Image (tube, rainbow over all chains, first blue to last red; front, side, top):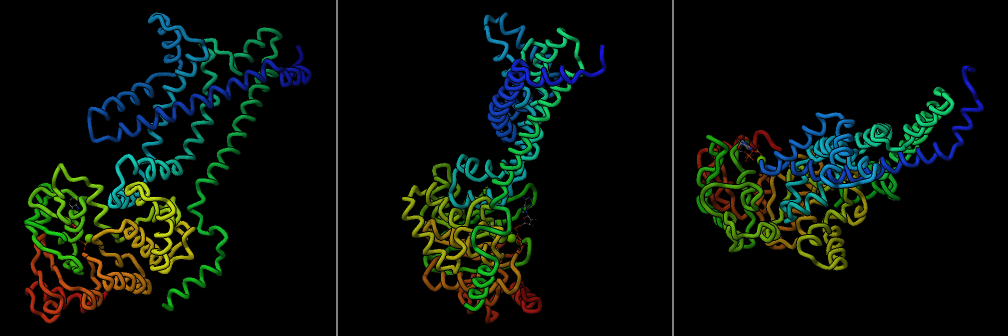
Length: 243
Length: 244
Ligand SMILES: Nc1ncnc2c1ncn2[C@@H]1O[C@H](COP(=O)(O)OP(=O)(O)OP(=O)(O)O)[C@@H](O)[C@H]1O
Ligand SMILES: [Mg+2]
């Protein structure tokens, strides 16, 4: 057996089977991330609540899902739900597992973001008569979101690779498909290199997307703004000072 | 307009407000002064329910502040508030800062709010900065924008908590100027400040607070002529020696 087969490498790189595996990975990441974010937001808000009845279940949730391996959670969902007569596809089980697990981590990230929103602005919003709900949606969430983009980016990046854990419940994503093909011709190195390349491609695409999102969210916080030039600003300050 | 009736408040064992009573009529400009930590901020924040209090009652235009029936939104719409550190919403443009509450709380029509906001911005000299974000403005400009934001709710009374304390000296005047114009137009104002010059010029009454009590409540003229408590006289001498 030769050490490295370029032919094998490029064959697998061009393989629609592997390519679709990568698409499935992207799909699982996107769906779990979005649902996990919404669930995480809910958990973060309830965990911050003054009322024990709300905060305690949220604390329990985070404690439980961060304290047990994702692998175990997936197997329990996959093997446990049918016993309750709930029959779901492997994909559904995978996404449920990933979502529940990710939500626990995202909740902590979101909570950190909410804690970092200046309390003075919250007080100002209250003084203007905004309801707590309006303050959350109009002031706290938008500002917290900007603050947590970097850690959220970490999460997306991590999740892209963590999806491979779902192979234990036979989810045919990128990693599982690579392993299936290994059985075929035993080109482990070539196959796993192709998989690594795909993961790199996906994380790089995400890096790019994250930069765009960050750029957008940072807009209000850049000192140079809009079409108003520095000269014009100086001029207006000067005229005001003359008033 | 505002009635304070024996207001008391404690943080644990520490009593911040020890039975404060006062009456502020429509169109009055009341300056609240006193040493640091005496409870001035706490007192003014009790008026729009940003702080809770345990004893006594406050009425704002007939609305009881410490009451389960009172709608805090309605109360706060009556009393505009300006903070020491401006507290503009940093993710919104100046115009959006001003338009947010009239839209969300008072449900006024967008076009009308925008016109009103632009008028207010002109009034505080910021019409050219409507589309900027707070970070691009100087402290004085931010505070003027914050005043415009409070005025956009068409409040019956304006509360100021040391509006110029966080400003560089050269910006203090531009903010005081706006406040003076407001006072001249007949706005009811309650203002915590160390700017004795401002107090001398526009205040109709002075409340001198020390250690959680309103020690003096007298016309500004009397206060500055020395017809006030010994504690207030000592405070005035101190302020004269340490301006700003
Ligand atoms: N959350 C709090 N917990 C405990 N004590 C507090 C709290 N907030 C304020 N205090 C205390 O209450 C007292 C009054 O505070 P307040 O901010 O009203 O003073 P102030 O007169 O506005 O002072 P300054 O001129 O420095 O702004 C202070 O002694 C302060 O230490
Ligand atoms: Mg204060």
